[in-house]
Image 1 (cartoon, protein in one colour):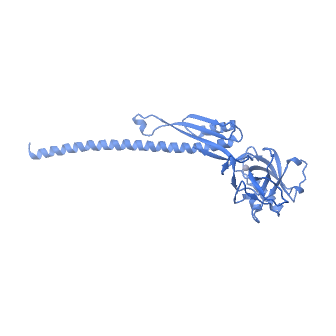
Image 2 (cartoon, protein in one colour):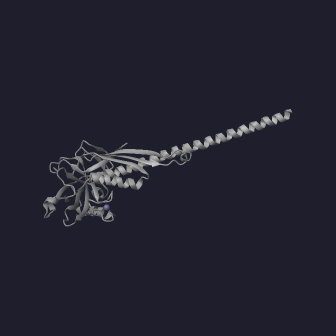
Image 3 (cartoon, helix red, strand yellow):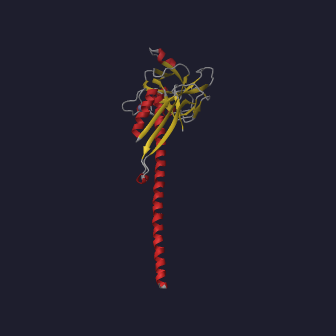
Amino acid sequence: MRKGDMLVNILNNRRGSSSIVFVCTAVIIILLSAVVTDIGYIAFQRYKMDKTLDRIAEQGAKALLVSKNECIKVIQESTIKSVDNMTKLDINVSDNKREMSINLERKIDYIFLKYIGFTDKKIDSRVTAKLSNVTSYKGIRPFAVLKGEFVYGKQYYLALNNEQVHKSNEEAILSVIPINIGSGNFDTGILYGYNKTVRTGDSLNKVSQIDFSTANKSAKKLIEKCKGSPRCTYDNYESDCSRIIILPVVDNLELNREKPMKVLGFTAFFIEDIDFENKDAVMIKGSFIKYTVKSSTSDGIPDYGLLGVKLIH
Ligand SMILES: [Zn+2]
């Protein structure tokens, strides 16, 4: 063999082995990409499922204010609607109806790994929703309600300036006290809510001068802003309906002694109508409802129907 031929042979062999290295490297890169893609895909699906479950848990917690059965029904319906290939759904509701947990499992198919023998994967997500009483709220309407026995769902007239009110059904009239939220702010306060956060333990003062006519108009606008179709009612309303107002519950209405009113908690009221019959009063017809909002909460305060939902993962 000539020297020259030997060199060509060596070169050919080298070229052969570099092709093998190339092919192997390519296969490894493709496999790794497939694994990375599928891992990313599953992580994304898991994230999406956690978010979906949070939303379902919040809907379920709201429904828990109605009943345990309603809560389970709402969770089942929205899970079926928003989660594909569900393999397990466990719902647990505590006896006091203040806590509920959901455990959800679903099957997902790999995108690439299924071609090399990896079958589907199961992912699961769990969340606990806890309902507690609201301890602070930004956006109260400037009326204070006295603590006591108001019945949810019963029809009341919230009355400002009770002395002017003459109604046959006296027991349905509930005196509320106009709160001082800064001069000139009362009517806007009715329409948009007080722009500062009020906390339990805070003191509120009565406002002495009110223009009843503009106050009535502001209250009327809350009804007009409701675009619910069919029309919202106290037991069937769109979430965030303009007819729902949040009011502070206070320990006393002792107006003459100029003692400030201490905030004990918060409640929600659904406005049905405004009674314009009395020109020197504001009469808001409606019902107290159990309602949830996003706000800080605690178990250590009395329950006036306004609750916050906390999700625990
Ligand atoms: Zn509405």
